Image 1 (cartoon, rainbow, N blue to C red):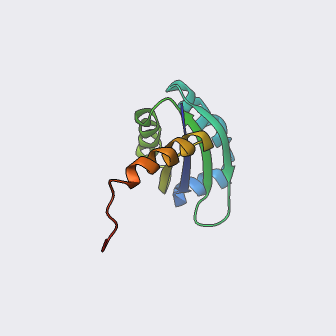
Image 2 (image 1 turned 90 degrees about the vertical axis):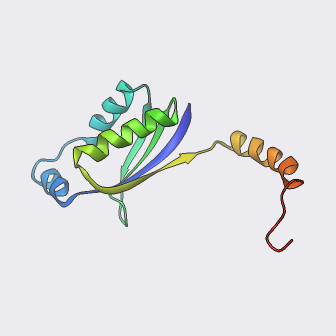
Length: 110
């Protein structure tokens, strides 16, 4: 299973609805993600450019794309992004592979 960081901005209408009638969005998101075989580990509301960030574990990129499509098609968000994350072990594997790939690479101007 892979990890993903979802960052989202609620639409004005969604923010208004949450102020008028607060609801547990972590529960709603977690149930949808679980129904597709994933796990919502954390959902945080935040200051800054985004309103929420979530750490999600999903069995494939296709499942994570499905989750993003469900949320995007709902009209709840005005924007967002998904970043695939790597564990330290996965990054170490990539670093080791880069050692052999380096021999076949020609740098700009090189």
